[in-house]
Length: 417
Image (cartoon, rainbow, N blue to C red; front, side, top):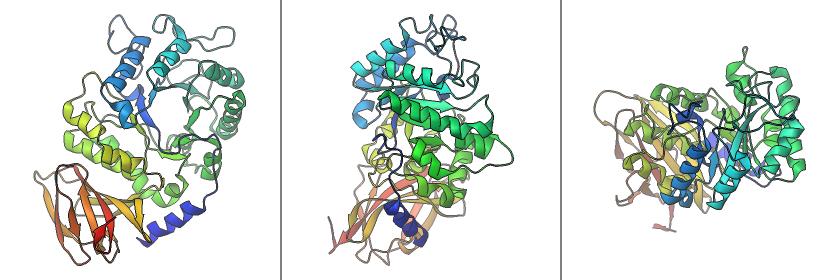
């Protein structure tokens, strides 16, 4: 835990980063890409194509089904929303799929109490071949402001990597100059760390002064293997990247896969727990019209959302692993005296068909409050909390490929404050 305490001190001393007053906690919302990709044939796939209708339906459900009340506030279109050519130098929405334009859609989303986001690419073309922003940065920044956009994801396909940093900085400056407050999601770290060889290490101090969040690693795919591949990046590089996360500037491991096709219920719990521990943006990318009650319950779990949105903004890390079990730990509020509370996830990579049992003590978790902790099961809120003292041994069982998730709150004078 010494290394985690050092990180606490780093966070306390970090200077203010991007000064737009936004994303003081990791952004929460919905994004189109993972589930709907670049489906544009509305005649063949009317319920799935990237269109005005799809975005409006997702916005309606986010309000009706409680996602907005739980904190999911952004509705974001990813790639494939525009015409294939600019008109008078401006990007315009596809006239068949978005007949009333982006400003209409933005106004509709805002009328629901939600915020609206969209997608651009710094290169000559987007990753799917639509118009890029290179040579049009000022025009596109003004378009975002004119449309009352609240969130922009700026991708990095089809451009010289060496030009990215200056370009992203310039686009941020131009957005700020419009006077419109827009959450700025950058992609250049992913192109440096994964997509370009040899590996190029981003300057995270520059990132914090430029972007509210940034993709570090490869696009996540709808599979358990892809989720673990992303989680492993954050486990292996935690000492390098986690100190740079905090209010206003976040590492982004990409969208939550829950509700799609690639994760079982237990694996969905594992992603949700790890993403909450590492202070990830909670961006859903699923069909909210068909989501199962069990997955919806996970996504609307207020206790887990509170861990992800903890105002300290300290990114947690993988503390240890062994026998196919990983322990992920994050400091959170409340703080009792000199002791933080902790979110602790036990994540299983075992596939041997039963809940693997293993004992642990507070010392194994490097939790040191002399009066012990009150422990709450975050996946089973109906379960009574229990108390764990310094010398207690507790047995944990984690289902194969799943996770157990707890909050440990320090006790003062043998009582929970």
